[in-house]
Image (tube, rainbow, N blue to C red):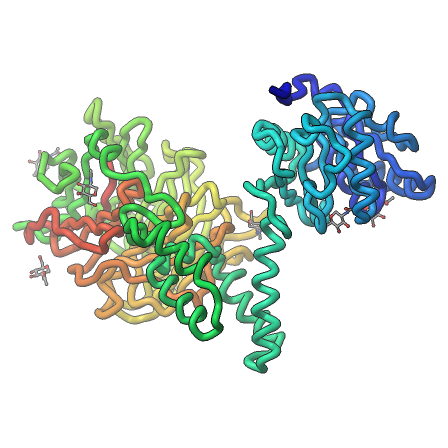
Length: 604
Ligand SMILES: *[C@@H]1O[C@H](CO)[C@@H](O)[C@H](O)[C@H]1NC(C)=O
Ligand SMILES: *[C@@H]1O[C@H](CO)[C@@H](O)[C@H](O)[C@H]1NC(C)=O
Ligand SMILES: *[C@@H]1O[C@H](CO)[C@@H](O)[C@H](O)[C@H]1NC(C)=O
Ligand SMILES: *[C@@H]1O[C@H](CO)[C@@H](O)[C@H](O)[C@H]1NC(C)=O
Ligand SMILES: *[C@@H]1O[C@H](CO)[C@@H](O)[C@H](O)[C@H]1NC(C)=O
Ligand SMILES: *[C@@H]1O[C@H](CO)[C@@H](O)[C@H](O)[C@H]1NC(C)=O
């Protein structure tokens, strides 16, 4: 048995050596210096050494902004022995000549400390091709570590030489993150690592399209931008969304037409996924990605639904006939929590405290709207925002990371934010001037839905447009208002969807990057539950077509995502509560009572 490699536990106090002070070597040196390590830059050329050190000295503070660490010291050395003594990591970035690399690794194996990790930045050679002079035990600490062009690109790919200790990958992944780089591990030896193979496929097909005269460079680039950059589509997620059976079907067509081997496309999908019923997002077994965690989790929690009854369908509708009603997760009526509410519309529950927050619209056009809260423990109703300030508050959202409430004010033509005790009430969007009657009557300015996505740093709202008018829009803006800007003219507002029948309430699934909304506009696209993909910045292009997930509601209003169970609860003014299962695209009616009219919905 060969002694196995043990991680250098004292690595924090030991230097990193970079062999080769060229364009890349000095950048790699800068990366490790910025993580607080002392760096030795070794190059046979005095000029390269001098330029390399100058680069690091001048630029390390820029790199260190990302690590937040005090930069380590850098030294240039000529001798290899001196460079590697006591190091925990050596990265070779010598010229791409195989014999030079073979000799270098042979020397490193004898000169470097026994626990020192030996990495090659080579992109054209696998590290296995450089092992001729390396001992058996030494091969276990050699790997490829391939950088692109830092600091613009901080990706680093790690790859085995066929013998590399498994432990090195987890150890180096953590160290790379400490150095503010983004590590990706190739699980096997692969010419081109991971990224260059992806890129190779794109290049190959692009050139083929050009060679066949099918399109032109600027059109290909524009199409790419629309589909992948703006759309934020990624290969594996997209295949799961499309369905792996469909992907296999399309691939088989290319296989036939081009006489390709089906082995690693159609046959792989068939054997590995499709035969097992793993068809992608639509399948309970998942696809390339595992399925979303399901049922048991949900059932064990014994969650209940709380729903607002606006009161307009009751026997004696009035400004006091609204209520908050509790149901089981399967829609069985439990009891009324709060009554005598004045057109309640938006509802949120703080999962930590169980406290409910909701809006009462009051009389539309009068400044008699309010925000209230209810503590289920003490059964006490508190006023959060009293009447007299806000006009017609609609959907409400709670950001638990900052303890802020967000709500849209329809006749106020604006979006508000305040603390959960009502203090620091501020307008964050003003879509029109409510004093100007033309503005006020233009329903395109009517803010209704609201959703907050703290991880994406954005909030979203709907401006519904005229009833069933096809002029509804969804917008987003940054949670932090740009310095010194007004809610009526802030520059960071982006329209993410337009021309919608009549969008109402919103919710964001941040973990899977979906924006969901209800629409009470005209069929076929209205009276529906919809979603659209957001990119990793929370953006979406207006040209992205939404997916209609469920239809034929009776004036749909509220929605509540149940991400864990891949479903969405929806309410409508017709007095119904539904659960829409996104896995099998079914819509089930949980509760119906035409003497009720439901708006906001939440879990308690
Ligand atoms: C620091 O980095 C910048 C940007 O890459 C480069 O132009 C400059 O030459 C570097 N400084 C030195 C001394 O190499
Ligand atoms: C390191 O990798 C980069 C990216 O492929 C390449 O440009 C550079 O030449 C490599 N450097 C050396 C010396 O291996
Ligand atoms: C989760 O969804 C399944 C249907 O996909 C349903 O049968 C089950 O009751 C749901 N669980 C809860 C608690 O909603
Ligand atoms: C609600 O209003 C009804 C009728 O005005 C009244 O009898 C009842 O006491 C009120 N309930 C609460 C909790 O205020
Ligand atoms: C909005 O936030 C994004 C991401 O945090 C940032 O890049 C952008 O500069 C912000 N826009 C404005 C106008 O502040
Ligand atoms: C919609 O709701 C109203 C009010 O409850 C009811 O009268 C009507 O029958 C419902 N329509 C449908 C199609 O369910």
